[in-house]
Structures are given as structure tokens and as C-alpha cells.
Image (cartoon, rainbow, N blue to C red; front, side):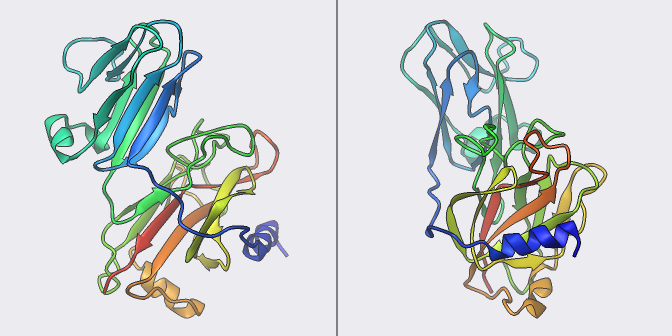
Length: 276
């Protein structure tokens, strides 16, 4: 039996210790502490609010932009004179329309300490991302906007969705980026969510039983894509995707040069409720 199949067997044999919905807050807190943004890379839903709080005893700012210069064109800028009150931005449709950025991704930095940088990716696809590598991953790493950090990206694998949830249209597309290139991978799905449980160097948040879907390798650019045709692909499995059902998806992938020697990782999760 191949190493990939052996690990898949282990994956499918795991059982969840606790089931239920994974909480998804509408307000996401970012700490400014020890000269860094804790929650450096966020993936949020359209309409969510990001709230910053400075815990350092020095001046910091949260300033939108990637040029590291305060020039008046920023979508937001706020200066914290030291440990002080919070500052919030709500990323709703009006904000995005008034401050368009490619891919609805907003970089930001601290004017006083330009090595402090962060990013916020606003998504409004057909499902909900969850199971990020926070507050801390199995290998003492973290990524508030993706799965746990892998060996090639200084980020984790990030799953997002596009298309619709229509079973008839079957046009849902799941895309995972920030991955190691040309590595074996397995897309798996389940109907229940669990607390974070270690799988390789990442967190698994889908409860058993699992169902495997096609997903042989990541691309040379470190991207995996599944769909359209996810519904049709599910039909022979004995657990077809039907209208009214909610399914969660994650991607397991090899990472031979991983920092803790566990040679595999998983993306964040993505939950979809399918319609006719």
C-alpha cells in the first residue's frame, strides 16, 4: 500500500471527539502586541468587522496600503498612542465599493514600524470558510486566514469557493492556494464539524465519516482546484450531495519538508449548504 493510501486510511479511520457547529464571529479581533499584528492574515466574510487593539506601550498604527507610506489614499488609518481603545472597520458592500482593491484583499501596516504588516481577504462566495490555524497550530504556528503554515509559503493552504450552491447547476468550484507545488493531495468532505484535531501539521475540523473526492496533485503553482462537477463526482460514493444538505470540505496534502517533520498538512475548511 502506498504512503498516500496509508495516510488516507488513517484519515478515514479517525473519529471526532466532539461535534457541532464551529463558531463564526462577525467581529474579528486583531491584537497589536510585541510589535506584530496577531491575526496577521485574515479571511473574513463580506459584512464582517475587524477590530484592532494596541497592547504595546508604544505608538502603533493600522494603516491600509502596501506602499508603506501615509499619503492620504488609504481606506483607513488610525494611530494608537499606546495601550488604548479599539479601532474597527466594517467590510461591507459599501466599504468595498468605496475602496476597491484587487481580489478584495486589503494590505495594511504600521507607519511607525513598517515591518509590521497584515492583510485582510474579504470573501463573498457561496459558502463559509472555517477551521483556520488559530490561535495556534500543532507545530506552534498560526494563520488566521488559512490552514496551518506549510514549508513553502509562510502561509497555510487556503480554501475558498466560487460559483453557486445549486445541485442542478453543479457549478461550485473549490480552490486552494498557498500550497507546496506538485504534491499528492486528497479532498475530503463530511456532514459534521468537530473541534480542532491534529492531522499532520494542521487542524482537521470535519467529523467522521469522511468521503474522499478526486484530488491527485497540487499544481506547479501550488494551487488545487475541484469543480465544476462536484455534485456529479459525489454520486458514485454512496453519499451523493443532495439539495438541502450541508457539507464541509478540507484538503489534505503532502509537505515533505515541513518544519516539524510530519510530512503532511491540511487546508482550512469550507462549508456549503446546497440548494436545488
